[in-house]
Amino acid sequence: MSQPMECPRCEVISPPGTAVCDCGYVFSAAGDATEYAKQTTRMLVSGVVFTVLGWGAFALLYFVLFDVIKTPVARLSFGLLIPGPALLLNGLRRLIRKPS
Ligand SMILES: [Zn+2]
Image (cartoon, rainbow, N blue to C red; front, side, top):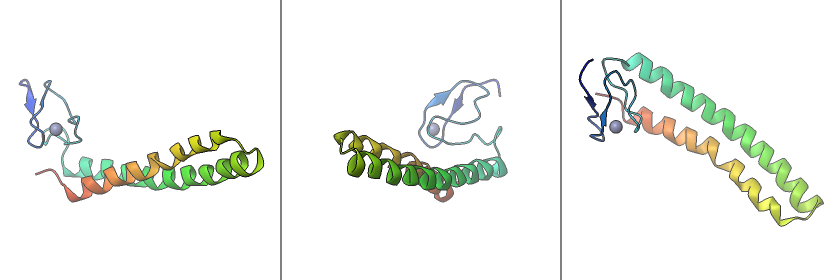
């Protein structure tokens, strides 16, 4: 653990002791498969939560801003649609690309 860690996936060199690469790869010494699976599950769960909350908030905001107040600011609420699915997608990508 005293030498720089090279990520086998993206080939970026990380400082010694780094647990997770910027690309999401978990170095095997620090994070084994169970830790990786735990993180993936957490991402998927928060992805679902953020999707439900975000889309719910979007529906409400969009209705109030656009239909009731009639302001073009309503378009900003589209931003609420993004974080949930993005997290979900990341989690799914981790499910598919397991660390080797
Ligand atoms: Zn990497």
